[in-house]
Length: 436
Ligand code: GLU
Picture 1 (cartoon, helix red, strand yellow):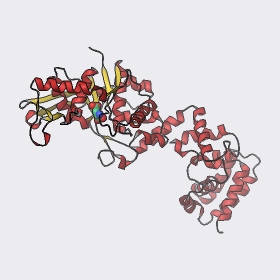
Picture 2: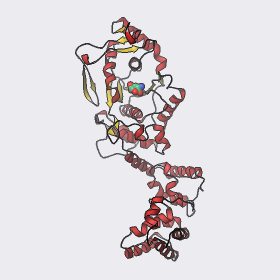
Picture 3: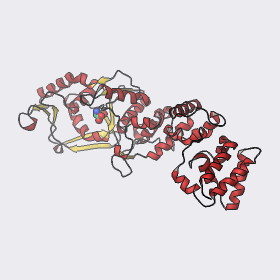
Picture 4: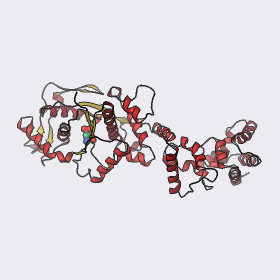
């Protein structure tokens, strides 16, 4: 078999939609799995949208995701002459005609077959068929002499010797046209694999109204490229076992078109967050530290915690951080006494009967401890919980008073990291704001 050559053929617009980059990921993995070539073709014929900046954004997104390509980038606009030559050939051989009347006057129009069926084997969706009578002739060169997408796309796939086209299933209808163009130009069409639509919770096409939809937005929101790559792969493919978080090598090894799904894939933001947390937890501690320090600096906060070491704080914070933009908010109370209070938590956990007395009592008991350890603080909290008939009424008010928020490391670990003096002071300060 000839060498496998696949390509990603985006039309740059300045923003790279996740549906498009998913096609790039599938093509890339396919090429890496079979040892073929992955090529990039920039379909830049829409000169208004395909600005140098838009192309730069596209290249940056690919680099960020580690989607390297094996030959120099092909720009579609450089091939216009070839597209027009192909149109001339089709005209000369009777596969196309020049329209003389109506709104298409002056256009070159491709003749679709008038009888029989147009068929192709889709490697994801199976056999695809269409009656010739349900198709229509279509324009391949506009009256101003510019080639239309269908012609350019097909001629470029021929020029690049593409053997397999993996793209979104919004192109299925086009493929019926494209294979006829290939045949008329004397080429065997490549194979095709159309990936299922990405949909929202309602089963409708996922769009920017549903949340972040462009690669750059996920990047800004603190998602790691490894996460986005892994997550988008699972939108339309599964390894066939229960693995979800996989290394790049595992994905290359396991990837196959047979395991691609043909039914729509639901975009699940919760799962993306979870997965990003898994990747953050696995990152080298130094890398996490660098992120935290950069974000502390940007927030005008000290780079060292008020108590203990930065490494000690990172211990429980790293595995609990879902996206980097949560930093330093999710651990700010280790770095400043001016930590903000979550209003809802204050209402629910602090502004309640008996909480003022509870916090004062806990402050006194903690203060009396010789060794302010996890075991010792836990023993005190447990004793009080037995008195009150549950851990919740003790644990929650203490946590909110000391950290301002409801989530974080285990309470006793948190208290020890904040330190005895500051824990006691914070409990008293919170108590003082509450009415007796
Ligand atoms: N430029 C088209 C797109 O981005 C082409 C897709 C393709 O053939 O892969 O939708």
